[in-house]
Image 1 (cartoon, rainbow, N blue to C red):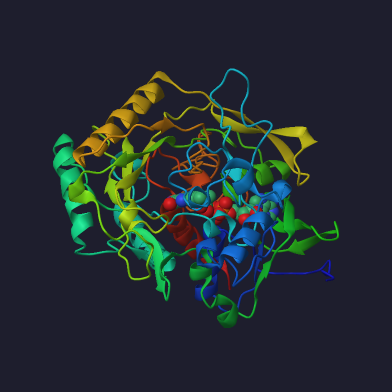
Image 2: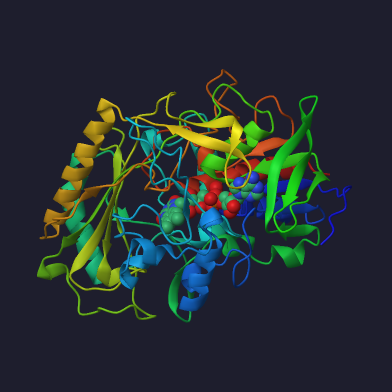
Length: 502
Ligand SMILES: Cc1cc2nc3c(=O)[nH]c(=O)nc-3n(C[C@H](O)[C@H](O)[C@H](O)COP(=O)(O)OP(=O)(O)OC[C@H]3O[C@@H](n4cnc5c(N)ncnc54)[C@H](O)[C@@H]3O)c2cc1C
């Protein structure tokens, strides 16, 4: 398809994951007359744009996963890495595997000899980004996880909008006896540790219910009927953003590459949003000559401990299969700034959206990384990755504080198992990058003091019209799954861009 060199739009959004989709939706809702071009280097997959793979037939899901694996596109990673179909469907229990179906590893450069590194760092490239593969846990952060320079009330309003966009249900199975008893047992074990912290509760989940029961929501739900209501909205797959074009400190367009023909062309615009994940957002800034001191720095990933626990008979269920009407739920042990800089999730198999079983629960515990300037993704001026973009090298080490957090993850997971009358024999500390929650690499700050890349609206310091979004803008050390925060921050940022459009 020919792309005229003189194509002009109001806003280009790079990346069609949950965050890029939120920018498009919020700007389109506020300015239905404007032209919004969303580009993604990955292809379209079966179904409506951004549909979660869980809602697809098994054949379509397998196809979608093969399509979104970047340079490893077409390689069946479930067969390569994990023979069990149940485990292949199960993001909670696959802790031994470095790469999951639908994703591709950063690979060479992910780990430097002698450092902890991020060997399991993965990305996804397809319409919908990682948001067509994710699990949908959407807990709000607590205490020091929250961003201190955004007024709490304003952030809570943004979270409310984010919850609506992603169809987040804060208690997907109210009154379910099994879940309530498990929650009560874990509350009895943990709430006294941190009386002023958020109590043990249910994990808010991004779900929509269809004829097959609850399904994880994602970019297709965020976008909704935007394409019908905003005639100037376009979603262009297999389109790589090579460079943001900047002159005299202001954006005037982007250089794009059609992945089918290799042809490059320019699109003119005054606003560019880069929401291309926490590794590739700083990569595109680097490729565009935007290289502030903190670019790629303070990279962090949740320390992750996973396993399973047996359950005492009090918490087992006859309800073994994944039937459409079956309740779902995950118990949440929230982060506490004072006593527990970790978050725990207990997934009873009998109430899981992902897997079947009656007498065990999955354990997924995340710890906040000790943030360091030296933890970074760096980019090469000469070497290229498989997309022809600057090659990445991750420099990443653990501190004594991290090692204490890892011990706390293990002891807390064991306490959780024991509180449910079980034991966990298979707790495993996952390789760096396994949480898939990379953060901080274009962090926001209250002022342009050399410690941040953008302001609290994602506006890159010193470049008018350039906004960044995604987990990469989160500046705090967190243990909560980050997507709901990134979507909430995108709501604020997109509202600001819409305000500047005539
Ligand atoms: C199995 C799994 C389970 C998960 N579970 C959870 C969970 O329960 N809760 C949670 O909070 N998070 C979870 N996550 C993480 C979550 O999916 C991400 O936080 C979220 O998708 C980030 O959204 P994003 O839009 O910023 O980036 P992404 O979804 O990664 O999308 C970025 C897009 O940008 C595109 N792109 C990159 N560079 C370019 C370029 N130069 N030009 C054009 N396009 C480009 C990519 O192709 C990609 O499609 C999970 C992830 C996985 C894989």
